[in-house]
Image (cartoon, rainbow, N blue to C red; front, side):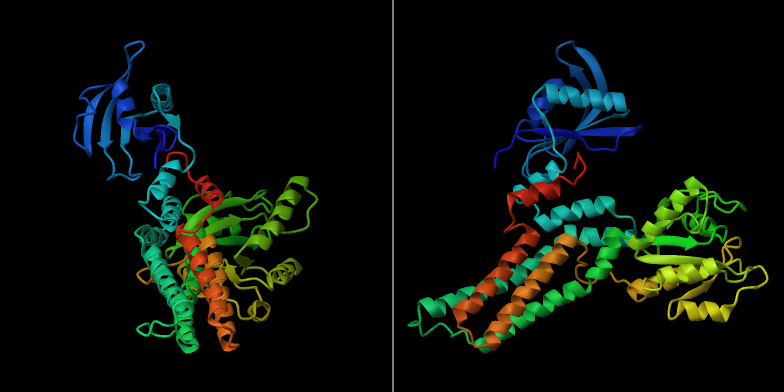
Length: 458
C-alpha cells in the first residue's frame, strides 16, 4: 500500500530537554537527507542514530544541532521508512524544524496517522491500535499493564481464535448442504452446532464479565466529593491528591467552582471532583457552583459524602442523603479527633448498606479504610491484570454484546429446529461482528473516526 510521506512533532509541546520530529513514508530518508549535514542518511544502516546539523539548503543557515534516528522498512512502527530527528526541546526550534521538513516534501500528519498506517500496513490490528491510545492515557500502573497486554495482542489472539472456530463451523455446514454425497465429511448436527455456539458464548460472557473492571481501569471512577460547606471536602481532596489543589479555610462557601484531579487508589484511577458545598445561598457566584455540583452528582460513579463528627446532623445533611440514596456512595465522618456530636445511629440508618468511614483529615487517619472501601465496592477488593484481557474499550464491549445476541439467536433457531442454512446466518453474523473488533470487517469511516482521536504525532 503506497502512501505519501508524513511528518509531525511526536513530543509534547513546550520547553524540554529534547523534542522529536517524526517522518514516515517512502521519501522519509530522502527528505531528511536534504536538510541534514552529517553522514549520508541514504547509505547508513537501519536502526542507527547519527549526529549532525540541520541546514536550510536555500540559505545555507544552520537551524539546529540534532541526532537523527534512521529506521528502514519493514521493521518499523508503520512498516515504512521512519526518521526521527531529535532536536533541542523548545517551541521555536522544533516548529522551525517541522516547517523545513514540510517545505522539502513531507505532509503534516493527521491525528493518529502513524498508528493508522501501522494498522493499514498490517503491523497491528484495530484493537492493538486502540491500545496505543489507552497506553498513552493510562493513569495508573494497572491501567498501563492492561493496555500493554492488549497492545501485545492478547485480546486479538482470542478474537482470532473465536472467529476461526466460527468460520470452520460455517464451512462445515456449507459442505454438508452443497455436497451431501461426500461420505467422508462428518455431518454437522443441531447438537454439534449447539455445543460449538454455546462454548463461544461462554468465552464472550467471560470477557464481558471482566468489562466493568477493564472500563474502570481505562476511564477511572468519576468520584464526587459532596457535603455541607466547611465539613472537610477540600481537605479530603488535598489529602488524596497530596497537594493543595483546593483552598482550605474556615469560611463556608470558599469552594466556588468544580476542582478535578486524577488520583491513584490501589491501582484504580479516580477522577476526583471537589464540588462547591451544596446549600441554599444568595451569593450569585456560589449559587452557580452549587448548581454545577448537583449536575456532577448525576454523572458520578461514586459519591463521597462528608459529614462533620463535631456537629449534629442538619437538615442539609439529610437532604444530601436523599440526593444520593439511589447512587453508589461512601459516608465519611470527618473530624473524628474532635468530640462526637453526630448521631451515629441516624447516620447508619440513612446510609443503609453503604460503607461508613471515620476520618481525621488533619491527622490523615482513615484514608486506608477509604481506599479499601472503594476497592471492595467496585472491584470486590481484588484486581488481577495477569488474567485474560480486560475488555475496557466501549466499542469492544458493545460489539461483544452484539455478538452474544447473534449467538443467542442462533441457539434459539437450533432449539426451534430451524434448517441449518438459516442457523448459519446468525453464526456468520457473529463472525462479522467479532471481526469489527480487530478491524477485519470494519468500514473506512469508522477507521477514520477512531484514529482522529489520537494525538497528532502518534
